[in-house]
Length: 357
Ligand code: NAD
Image (cartoon, rainbow, N blue to C red; front, side, top):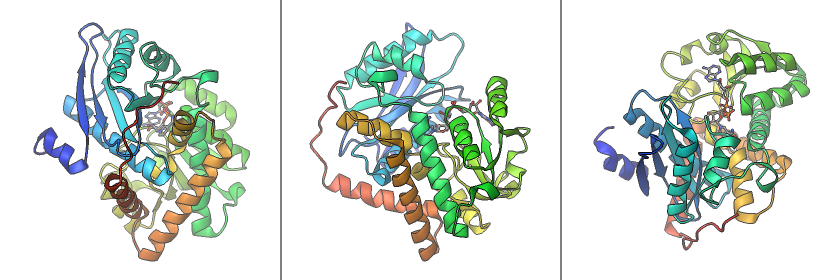
């Protein structure tokens, strides 16, 4: 990490970064708390195989900051946190998630965690044995978060099509989804229901088979970027849009749920110069955060329709302003979110820990 972790924290405006190690379960990882100036920090727990500790830390910090930006543009009175756990076959995962629950409990309510890649309902239930500050699955929780994300992506996609062509005209559209997991599958159902010709890629054979049964045309997982389509929806992992992949793209619009699909911020400008409309990931993928935060802060479930509407309107606003200013939508959205963050930090709310659910 360039100039070390403390310099990276200062550059990105982080409050705390914790290095995690539990002797009993063998788990190691990081938790990056980006911002708690107007409310608790909310964010998922990612379990993944990283090539190095440094790669894990960098991913953790990028994802935590993106959560704060999501809160700012999503109108959520909370900030961002992310936890990454290094996947390893010798870890006792049940004990590992219980340990994480104790870490979160020890933070006294300034952090609440939810699902992410590698952490689903089973793992959240293990965390919930030790703390209330976790998204609860089932009837006691905020409802299906991935469905909220998929709805936001669908409505954001619609806003992008309307921005370019004046109408969504779904039955004429071809959409390619990378990753048919929790979000990608629901998004595929929604798109197929609207009459779209849907194609996708998925590395897990079981999930691929299930999507094919829905009517999704399966593509070879090396072909999705080169497929000519209206919209490419990245719904797998981040970092897929870079110097080598961008020239291969044949989509007019990129709009998906994956966090940080751009390898670097500058790649948004590269897409803009090629005439590809990139819908900022932290704007379009805010559905789960909005639903989870609403439940935590107000103890009510926010209907999917409201979430989709809000995200669609925000995407529309960002695209219109970016076009008027000749900027890439990503650059404009980051700028706007940072401006809102400065406003929050200039007028912080007294730190109030989240009440137990
Ligand atoms: P998931 O793990 O359920 O699904 C991801 C799927 O992508 C998996 O089935 C995996 O096999 C597949 N995959 C991985 N690499 C692939 C590749 N190269 N090609 C094709 N398929 C590949 O995760 P999810 O909850 O659906 O989340 C998807 C993305 O959206 C993640 O980046 C996540 O951080 C982001 N996101 C999710 C939510 C949510 O509500 N779940 C909210 C915001 C952002």
